[in-house]
Length: 267
Image 1 (cartoon, one colour):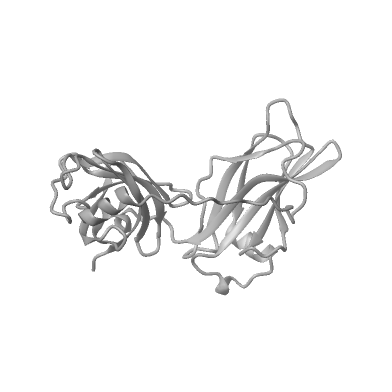
Image 2 (cartoon, rainbow, N blue to C red):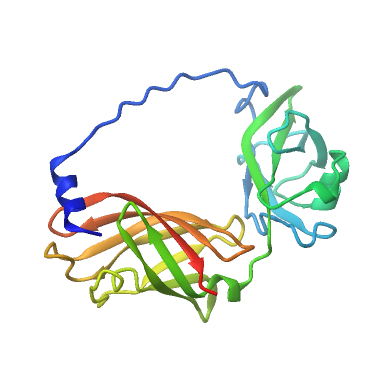
């Protein structure tokens, strides 16, 4: 981070007006009648190294006082409109476990062609009082590697062209929670003292999404007071890399924008 970036932020403020046009849902009627929900997802990926026996598991709940005749779980692949039924429940709440091999077979796919980054979509179709509707509850199931704590921590190289920052940092998993990651070094790269750190990141074990609660990590940054990071991102479970988007704030100015950072493991 350099002072011109901050000065530019103070001088230049742009507002973007975005208009959205609501389009009809090609899948049909959604969110009508009984509306179920998908909850307690764990795990939420298909393990690319074990497609024969990996699975996703989740609960299906319905609003109190409602009892649909049945709820079917339909699967599709990589945005293809073709859908197949892979499960059905008639009592609620229900715990559903769906295997990757089963979905691949039902969709007529070649297991050898499934790769990391592919997405299976699970949707709920509800029948109640003679009305069948497609729920707004949708689960995106990525194909990825199973979580390995040892791959999520260690010596990393951080790069952010937008924030004009590059250097080595250290990630360490909490001894009691392998999905809680401590980050040190982001501001030491800039020659600052991280007297308020470390920054804490939380990896969602079901989706590998990363969240970062707002935290000041240095009490003095470039004469603007404390510097605070917050944000979100994704963790790649196959190579241990992180793609992060940090909202950065300075005590004397406030928020100075959102910046992309990539963390890759050092050899």
